[in-house]
Each structure stands twice: as C-alpha cells, then as structure tokens.
Length: 145
Length: 348
Ligand code: HEM
Ligand code: FES
Image (cartoon, rainbow over all chains, first blue to last red; front, top):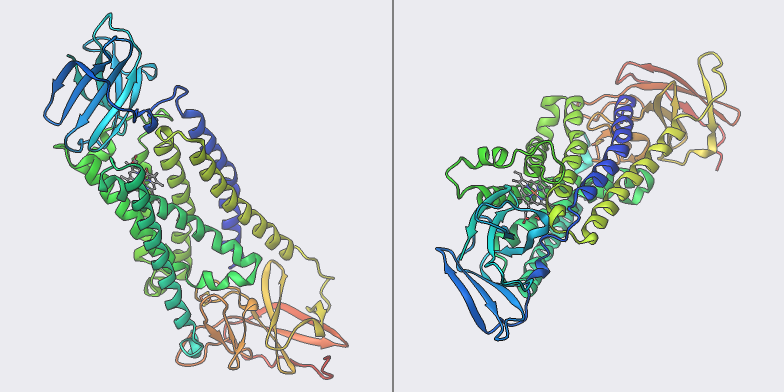
C-alpha cells in the first residue's frame, strides 16, 4: 500500500470504530420492548374443540375457538396460499378502525399453513384482528366477525 | 507482471480455493434449507432462499473484511488474500439473489413498480425501529455490484490502480450499510438476543483485526533512524536480511524494500504497481522480486518487470559500511538501473 492509501484506511477505520458500535447499539435499543412477533407464539398444541366464530376470506380462514367450558380462547389462522406479504403480524383490534400498538400484538404468520395463537379469555366483546405488513408498515386486512 | 506467474502453480491453488468456496456455499445453503424444512415447514421456499443467501453473504462479507488485516498479522493468510476477489464476486452473487428475490417477494405483487415500492412503501426515514431498512440493503448491493463488475484486472488498468482502490474502499461503507440493514430490519422482529450477539461479535472481530493490524503498521512506520550522513541512513545489520528476502524500512514516510539476492543488496520501492502489494514481503523467484499478493515480478537491479511486461518501480541506492547497511531514501526514477552493493564477507 502507498502511504496515501494507508492514511485513507486509517481514517476510514477510525470513523467505523465509532460508527459501527453506535449503529449496533441504536438498532438494539430500537427493538420494541414488548415481546412482538415471536414465531414461537404459534401455539403448536392441538386446536380447541369448538369454533365460536368463523370467517372465510379469499386467501385465509380465521376461526375463533374455545373449549366447551369457554375457559380458554384461541385464534386459528389457516393461510391457504402464501400471503403477498410473507411476514405478517396479527394484532388484536379494539374496534373496526383501531390502529396497531405493540401491546395488542398476537403473533406472526409466515407463508402457508395453520397457526394457533392463545388469546386472553375475555368474551365480553368479540375480538377483531388486524393483519399487518411489518416490512411496509401497512395494514393488509382487517378481520371482524 | 510475472512471467512465471502461471508456472509457479498458484493457479492450481486458485482453482482449489474456488471449489472450496463453491462446496462451502452448497453445504451452507442446503443445510439451511433442510433445517428450515424440518423445524419451520410453514415457511415458503422464497423465504428460505431469501434468508439462506443473505446470511451466507453476510458471513462471507465478514471473512472478506478480515482477510486483509489477517494477512498483515500472519503471512499464512496471504493465500486467502490471493483469492479474495473470487470470494467477493461470490458474495455479490449471493447478496444479489437475496436482494432480487426480496424485491420480487415483497414488492412485485402490488401494482407499483417494485423499485419504486422499495423506496416508497415505507417512508419512516426519521425513525430507527421502523426505518426503511431495505433501502440500505439496496445501496450496499449497488456498491457490491460496482465492485464485482470492476473486479477484473482490465478495469484496474483502465481506471488506474488509484481510482480502482478508492472504488474498492467503498466496501467499508457497504459493510456499514449492510450492518444497519440487518440491525434496523430483521433484528427488529427476529428478536432473539443471539442474533444481536452474532452481529456484534462479527463487527468486533472485523474492528479488532483492523485495529491490531493498523497499529502494527503505524509502529513499523514510526521506527526512528539516526540522522542521515551524506544522504544515507543506517538501517540494519547485513546479516538481518536473509538471502532472496527483504527487510522493509520506512524512511521519510515512504517504504523501501532492501532485498538480498546472492551476495548483493538492492533497494526498491515497496509498493507493487498492480494493487499496491508489499514487495518487501515477497521473495526472489527465478531472479525476480515476486509480489506476495498476486505474483507480479520485478528485477532487483532496475525495478522493471521482465519483458513483455512494462511495470516499473523506483530504485534506491544502498551501501554497506562494516556490518551496517546504509540506505539513501531519495528515489531514482522508476526503472532506473542501480548496481546494488556487494556483501564483501558473507556474514553467514
Ligand atoms: C436490493 C437490495 C436488498 C433488499 C430489497 C433486501 C431486502 C431484505 C428484506 C425484505 C429482509 C427481511 C427478510 C425477512 O424477514 O425474511 C432482509 C434481510 C436481510 N438482508 Fe437484505 N436486502 C437487500 C440487500 C442485502 C444485501 C446487499 C445484504 C448483504 C449481505 C443483505 C443482507 C441481509 C441479511 C443478513 C438479512 C437478515 C436475514 C434475513 O431475514 O434474510 N441484504 N433483506
Ligand atoms: S501482484 Fe497484485 S499487488 Fe502485487
């Protein structure tokens, strides 16, 4: 290396020495505090026996399931074809035009398949859901039974 | 350039490296696909392809960035340096596969042009967590693309080594872009701490190696010599230089290689005309000083590449007094014939 090139390298790496850790820490701190999008939120246990509500959409079917004592509640999401957005999040919607908040996150669905998510057992109102595209930060669809 | 460039068998070694890279990529990708198929059968093939190629590209990028400082720290890594270019092109192909499939997968299904969608579908440019991280990946990919298409020596000569090297230093900027692409993208929703830890460890390795290699170079360049006597600086003892090898001295901030060839010492500029490789770290093969990076060759007595090649480096005067080697740091024009100096009593 010529001495000029050595100096350039020294300058670039001095800058990166600060920029890289700062970037990593910024990204790390920006991670939302609430547990979002754990693919593990997919509850692999069997479906609860009763379907309380069901909704058919073009690409997916959504069922709200419960046991016969109504002691637990479960969301069953059956994706028939891959979604146009491969990583979609499901949020609980408090009303027909509610927006997404990290407290209301239920889980993530990927491509085709059936996904189960346990829900808090509160049937005082029928829950609605928002399908949200995390990549584009856009609502894909709303599910209201 | 080196006449014996082909003959010394480095090209066979190069082929072996290419196969090694290819084999490793195949094993990595197929393992990734297989493991995903077992544990996450619900993932689509595109998703697996996007993730396997991106993580492999990121891994290779780290290796590429570590090769430079590693080969400064230990000569054993020089053979990796020789093959870094192919590793770079491989990394680009993987990153491009990831990028192109991401664009198709995430943006081609709407009625907006996918490239427009890439930049406009998310405009949270003032937030960290929701930052449009894909734009960062896109710019990194553009840099990798420019580097990959100019990687051939044809471009090195056409653009001049200086411009070429400057262009290729953009890889450091691209590295930072990729890092932020991942930290503000996938890391925001693949929240497992192991991912952040892996990224941090990778960055720590890259930074530490550059820091260590850099400080060593600075130390070498700052070694002090006694003031010049009649233009000559006393640099070392005669027997410190092995036959067919050199010692490098940084006098007046320019590095000079003093080579011993049989019983004669010669001094030439340390910087190879090809890509600035350290000539003093090479050795004399077939009577020619051979660059350790890619094998360009120069005659010790005049700094000229043997015909038909035309590269020339500066030469210097060197003298022996008693047991001391004295070097004159004023360069002669590139390719100037210098007689060198004969070691009267071979010291070993
Ligand atoms: C046009 C350029 C690019 C686009 C549109 C793009 C897009 C994306 C998207 C959408 C994701 C999230 C994928 C998911 O959640 O499954 C992602 C993740 C990632 N990207 Fe890129 N990217 C580009 C360039 C690059 C480049 C040049 C690299 C460099 C190696 C890279 C490395 C990664 C890595 C390591 C991840 C995390 C693992 C993953 O989720 O795939 N990307 N990228
Ligand atoms: S041969 Fe490439 S730098 Fe010397």
